[in-house]
Image 1: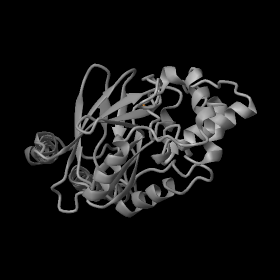
Image 2: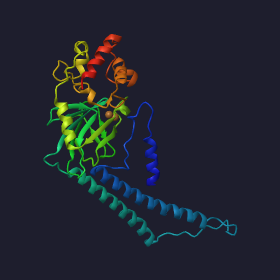
Image 3: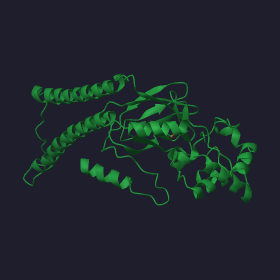
Image 4: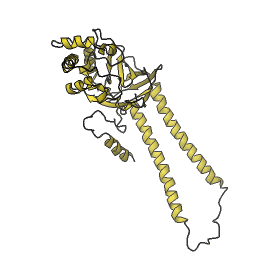
Length: 337
Ligand code: CUA
């Protein structure tokens, strides 16, 4: 059963041409404590229910063959009616009740240990805000805002858990990094908590797990777990103001004259809009459009030219720029390292 589900999962992870981000993290390969505990009770539940299935199915098959009608049976006589057996009735009441209590008990224990774990003092605090259809990621202690990528230290010895506060500005979303932890809803006017301690460095793929509108499926996210020193270096880069690069002056002026500034922040400039992702360090991110495309110059160009072609229904309009304007704006965006 486990290996069948594993192959099914591997199939789902098969790379889709052009959209390599559309991957599903493997729930059968947990790499953080909450995911590990939840994986373990998942397997226990599958084992117990598989046992029940085998017992019940075997009895049914046995009964079908052992008690089927034979040519020698008297067609007009009812079979013996068996009822009122205390032993049998006790057995089929007590055994299922015990099984249910075992399952409730182990589940409650894991739920409690995930929810009651208290953050160590040194923990990294991260606020994740769901938007239609992307994730805003804030680091209050570092005064960093980024999008769709959650950087955190890896935790090879299990001591560097990061704590996430989840909320939403519009509808209910659900934050899910399958290999690191269970799903947690991101709901407006409410803060939910989640923690994760990725054992291995690397990029963990995740999804929005609550239907939230047209582009629900393209609300991808990734956790990038890196050694503490690398995380600190990344944070220091993110804290810097937007890079000033020669040759991008035209694009910068154009960007600031367009409605881009109503929705996007570029720190240290008049661009202070909060509806869309912070672009201060846009080029440091792996994807655009919340994982819908790799962050490459061609994709960025196609995206700015007409986001609706790539992510129909998304809240960014095409600004109908001329070829020349598009070139200048892209030059500017590419300078935001
Ligand atoms: Cu956000 Cu589904």
